[in-house]
Length: 276
Image (cartoon, rainbow, N blue to C red; front, top):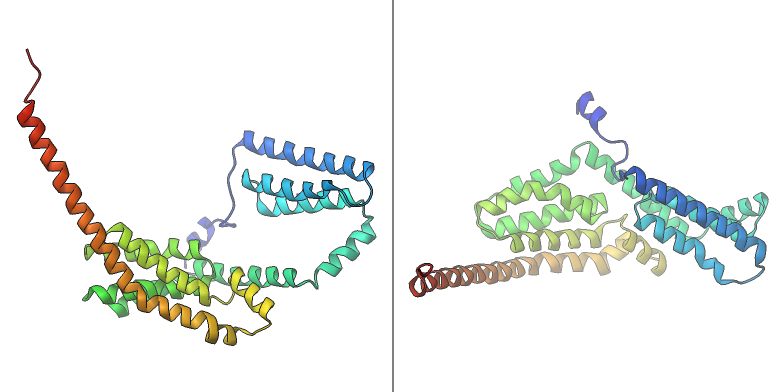
């Protein structure tokens, strides 16, 4: 990868650009939420419904487009102000939370997402899809369907995310499927089936990490008894599902084309033009 490409690449692929007016509104909402937290911390003592304020504040800020890290810090600070903890008590609480299973799951997900981002930036993710499709070839329709599903499976399993991986795979596989006459619905189904199969075997996916932590099993056990059979079943049944969707869409398209032609001729015959 050249130095120019590295320079042009954004530092944060998930950064959201906000208009100046919306940014001011978000800052005002965050300030009002923190001020309300201070008031709640001074006026209340013990269990209170004000404890829902950090959750609501976090949801509102993130849904309106604030950076998720800033929203998280704001909501945590709101909770600390409501409880009224001292700096020493806050440090002790944060230290204890590091040993929690939820924190461990989040840390594993963050590290896995970092590995996936490295694969995306270095171009390895694109190479995976191109290599699988080159091996599958375009001589047979079944081979193309299986190739698309396997490439999406490998990419999602490597990146640990469904949306980001399919966004990389789609521009590569769409010209191949369009050349063979697959409809958009059939192409979307083969991409989605392969991506979901890859998400089940992704070692750093959030749902898989939570399942392995809750069941107290390692990845190989989870893969052998749960994720592996489900992924294989998806790949086996996927071509039949794609063929069914392709048949239904083709039949619907032919029916729609026939209906659109008949009324046109009937209208022209019954009412050739405006009356004088």
